[in-house]
Structure formats: structure tokens, C-alpha cells
Image (cartoon, rainbow, N blue to C red):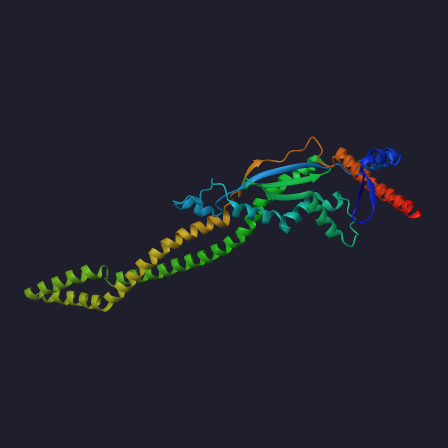
Length: 341
């Protein structure tokens, strides 16, 4: 039985076996040739070994807040695993030029990947090779996975572990730049406040030397003693107490103003001291930003290429393509025969 296609060509579905039998030799030759060629090509491909690091981000990045402040919500817990946002942040840092440049320099990847240093596009080729062999991805469990392919299994594992370590130093550097600026601002304000308090304290001491110690009680007691002296007619006591009342009246308001200002400044200094200590910790302390689940180790088996898969795929594709070509040729012959009759 013959079936007619939309373009007018004919193909006898009932003689499919006959078709394959008739073209068996070309198909066998195509299959064997494809298998041999793909085998040769697969053995020319350099073997690569895979190593990977799996890690979780931490929830809190602020060291001082995590360690020195009360956190009822638990969001600053240094033992809390991070969420999607933290995982995305880690990925962005892993893709940073800083980490890539340090890995390229340390392992001399330009030479390791056999890239001609005189090539006009050497950096482009290097970055393409880097992206091909080193990848980062977020898993379904919100962890981050670093995968490294290399011809040397030991170098693959070392690069993967180094990238994981560079994550901490890179993020620390990024945050420390900002933390140092914040620390400088707080430190300057803290020192300025201490200087202001020292000046107010000196003013209090100067007023103390004038005999002003506690304006309210001192004024009340002196007034009472002055009244008693008046009632007794003690001229000496009256003069002495009158002089004291004059000093209290002249400097009392200044004493109260300085004392009140000193109290306010000390309250502000206490708050600034806490900020100063937190900013100092953030600027100087180092704390990891990840939980390592699996460290990389040298792979015992290669991950690429899968030679049997390359050979099988190439052979099947070649045979299918050969069949299509043979069907086309067979239909052309049929059409020509029909046209001749």
C-alpha cells in the first residue's frame, strides 16, 4: 500500500523492510564510519573531573547586632540559616570579578587552559573557559553549589574550596569598607562628645572653686542661715552669708545650666559608646558568612566526556540522517520512473 505525502512524493510503508534491506550496506557503512569517527573525536577530548562545594548562607550579617544586642525576633541569630535573599547575595558575590581575578591569578588559568597570551581576544577566551568550567547555582533547598570541572581532579577540588573561602574574604572586604566609614563617623562623634563633656566638667569644677556645689539645697540652706543670722544680729555671719548668697545668685543659673547640659551629654555619650563598640566590632571582627555542608575533594572518576554517549548519539544521528537522505533519493528515483512512463 502506498501513502502519498503533501509534496507529491511516494513512500511505500509496506516495503519498509525491503527499503532497509536494499540500503543495508550504505547504512551499515554510515553507522560504522560515524562510530569510528565519533570514537576518535571523543578520545581527542580532554577528560575533565568535577568537584563541588555545597554551602548555606547565614541569616545575620551584622556581627555586633548578632552578638551584643537582644533580638526577640531571632533574625540576628548567628546560627540561623539564611533564606532566598541571602542565597542570591552569595551567588552575586561568587560571580564577582574580584573572586574570578584571584582564582585566575593563583592558578595561572591563562596557561592552564592553554590560551595564547598573544591572542587579541585572550581575556574573552579566558572568561568563556572560566564560565564553562566553573559554575554556581542555587539548589532547591536554598543552598548554593559551586561546581568546578578541570582536567586535574586535585586542581578542580582546590579551586572549588578556594572559591568558597574567597566568598568570606570578599564579602568581609565589601562590608568592612562600609563598616570602617560608619566607625569613623561614630568615633568622631564619640570623641567630640567626650571633649564636650570634659569642657563641661571643667566648668563645673571652676564653679565648685567659687563655692557652688548644689545650687538648690545650697541656696535654701544659706538663705535659712542668713535669716537666722539676721535675727541674731550676727554681723560677721550676715556678711559672710550675704557674700555666699551673692555668689550663688550670680553663678547659680550658670551652674544649673552646665549641670543639666552635662547630664544630657553624658546620656548621649552612653548611647554613643554602645554604637562605638558595635561599630568597632563590625569594622574589626571577622565572622564566616556561610555554613559548609560539603567540601570539595578530588574526584576518582571523570565527569566529561561520556564517550559511549557521544559515540551512541553520533551514530544514531548519522544513521537517521542517512535514512532521510536515502528516502529522498529513493523517492526522486520513483518520480523520475513515473515521469518516464
